[in-house]
Image (cartoon, rainbow, N blue to C red; front, side, top):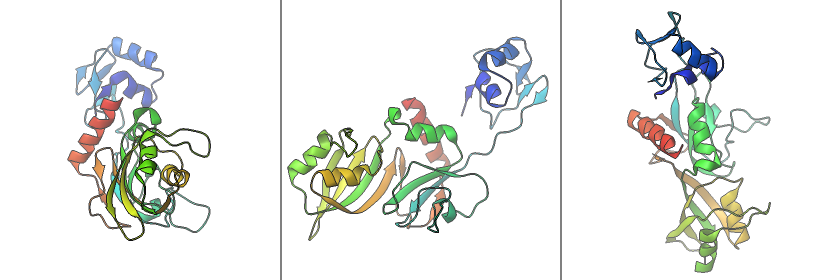
Length: 241
């Protein structure tokens, strides 16, 4: 992804952005053999950037993995107890971190990556990326209970949730499967919303985050994101910025 040249240089350790702008203005920076100018953008993964004719080292290759987290697995890289973590499910070397969290009893889509910008954009509340869930609640909800979810629910800490999109997917003998879309991710939010409106969550599955969908990926399995998914994800977070 193309970003401003002075930001690339600053991240590579050439000083503040102002100092890096001076390097560019002095003609000491080139991109693919051409002297750079202020305002130029480059892709650090694809373009050859040099300072004083010394090439910058290529950044760590970005990895994007979609994982179906099963119940009983912790959304963390490591854990003080013996329960498995999402990182332990992926037998690959290198740094990988979960984007957002699902509590240990929840399941579904987790993005694992070493891309800090993507992680920040998908998790920071200001960007309001959609997260979609299938939620089994008991008993069968009344319309006024669902309407409370749509208007906002006060949680245990006194905060008010943003309005959620919620509808009944189908009823079962004791309760109902709901389809819920949130634009935030407070701790145990859906479980608290249920509790505060007289419902109980029996099962909770995240099926979508931004443009990424869980599909038919089995619990405990993972796959690399396809190139078109990565491009769309980068486009989505850039537009929200």
